[in-house]
Amino acid sequence: MLKLHHLVNSRSHRILWLLEELGLDCELVVYPRDPKTGFAPPELKAIHPLGKSPLLEDNGRVIAESGAIIDYVVRHHGGGRLAPAPDSAEYDTYVQWLHYAEGSAMLPFILGIYLGRLGEASAPLQPRVSGEMKNHLGYLAGALEGRDHLLGERFSAADIQMSFVLEAARPSGLLEAFPVLGAYLERLHARPAYQRAVQRGGPLQVGGAGKR
Image (cartoon, rainbow, N blue to C red; front, side):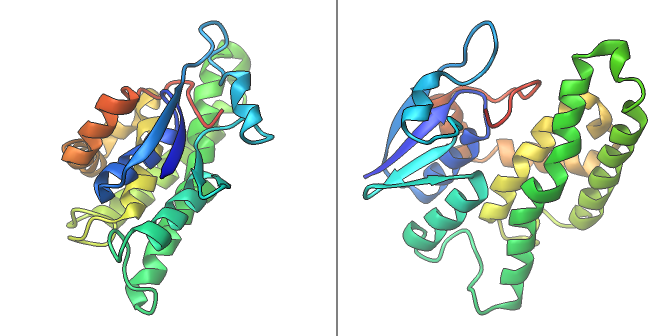
C-alpha cells in the first residue's frame, strides 16, 4: 500500500488530492507544523534527509518532490487516468504545465509571502516580485481563457499541480484582478476528491506555508 507523509497546510495536499481522484488506498501519516516556527517537525528527516513534505513510500521506495510524485503515481497507479497518452501531442503540453508550476511559477509567490513578513525592509524588492507575480498570473489567465482546465475540457494531474500556485497567489491580492483564475480555482475546489482530501488532511490556507 502507498504511504503518504503529509505535512498539514502544505504542498502535500496536492498528493492526497491526487490519490483521492484516482481512488487509491494509502496509509496517511499526518505531521503537524511547529506552533511557533510553522516549520515541519524533525521526524520527517527520518524519512528523507531534507525533512520536506510530501514524501510518498511505495514498495520500499521513497519519492520526494511534488512533480516527481505526481508523475510516479500517474504512471504506476493511474491506469491511463489524469494524463494524456505519452505518444500524443497533448502529452507534451501536460508535461510542460506539470513542471512549469514549480519550475517557474511558484518562486515569485513564495518570495512574496516571505517578503510580506519583512515589512518596510522588503520595499526594494517588492516591485520586481510583484511584477513577476502579475506576469505569471497573466500567462496562466491567457492559457485558461475559454477553457475549463489546462488541457481544455479534460481535467488532469497538471491541474492538481498548478492549484498550489493559485493558492499561493491569494495572499498577494493580485488574483482578484484575474477572474478567469478565480473561477478556475473554484472549479478545482468543487471537485469531490478535493473536498475529500481536505477532510482527510486538513484545509489548505497558504500564507507562509510551503514545502517545508
